[in-house]
Image (cartoon, rainbow, N blue to C red; front, side, top):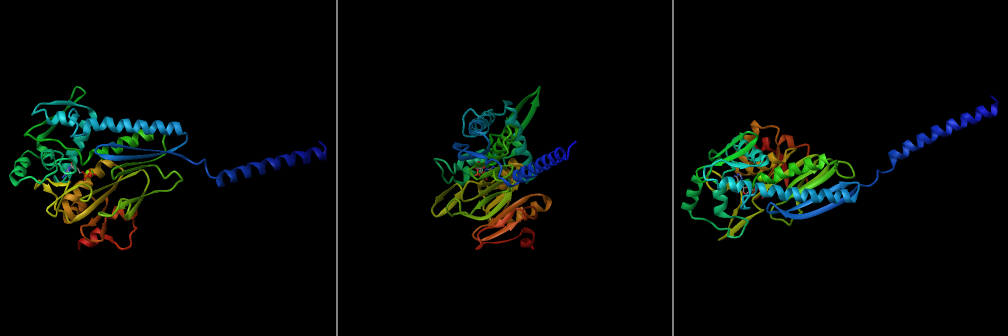
Length: 361
Ligand code: ADP
Ligand code: MG
């Protein structure tokens, strides 16, 4: 071969190698095709639901949004205590008879029973007679008489709920005049089901906000963890005292400031103490639970609020894996569990944050 031929081959090989290296470097440096976004708002489960999904293809994202909306409505028609024909209403109206329900209603009621037991009854799925009596957050909210509360309380308690699975079908039996109310856990389960649907459909990044029940799928569209705010009670919506940085996770807050009735200068909120049948006299302003399992986060945020600071500290000693952030009532003091320390950041510096264990001593 001539010298010219050899040098031509060498030059071509060198040029090829250079092209590959440049392509490799550029592919690393140039941003990936920017994710598109689709957003939707609608009313479901007694709250405004806000959905944001990110990915490629506007039509695909719009279809996902429509699918989630339909799924939310379908689940509401199973779990709601306010829809006459829902599984939950039919079971409660069954007057001691076994009522056939969907597998989804069965499984959520079963989980609600487990979490009720686990929280020593602070979370109570058979509290419907009390919530219906007060109607806080809906038309006709009122402060009932003491004897009405006592009578309603006698009909509360998970002992009145029985579950059975027979020949692949699911049944619930409600006795003792009890009514099931899954208002403290249903939004969490809906968020879990929606997240699973999105992941199954190949969506990589999404945010679901079910009236303060937040859940995120994957990382932020641009990469990195999502930064979610925790609302400062009694301040305009969107004013946060702290933030939580997470991916593939749920962040659920329960507080006395969301739904309440004010009468004669007293504020009656919608989270009830199953021991008294009255709004929980909690020394907490809000409880935020950070958990991959939104169903658990929802029930626990409600239960820990009912327990109050001391009760919650006792519960957490036995449940060290729980990531939670507590805001003390009437104070700018935040207590953080060990599991939440790495994800929580104090945002409003007029507040102070400390370890819940330290605060207990
Ligand atoms: P929100 O629904 O505002 O996000 P929660 O998750 O704390 O707040 O749920 C409050 C709802 O849960 C009430 O509206 C009522 O339906 C129900 N509930 C109230 N107290 C309890 C309780 N101790 N255990 C279980 N459910 C409760
Ligand atoms: Mg809840």
